[in-house]
Length: 71
Image 1: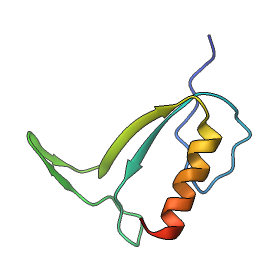
Image 2 (image 1 turned 45 degrees about the horizontal axis):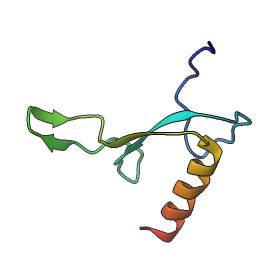
Image 3 (image 1 turned 120 degrees about the horizontal axis):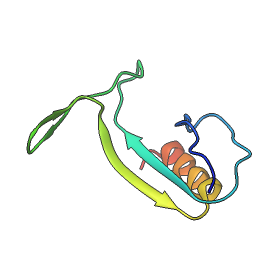
Image 4 (image 1 turned 60 degrees about the vertical axis):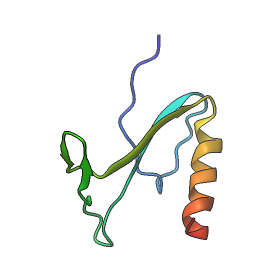
């Protein structure tokens, strides 16, 4: 079994190929998390979504494209 890798910013390139877990966060223009109201309280980390994929590089490229199109 392989070891867990650290969370990596989407702007950093990785040569890792294969499965991956990712999270999407809402941050201010200064890079600070924006609190999101949840049922049990505020989420201070600004996490919008946590997902997984069998091809992390393909997913990163897709997310980069969405960010550039501001969707």
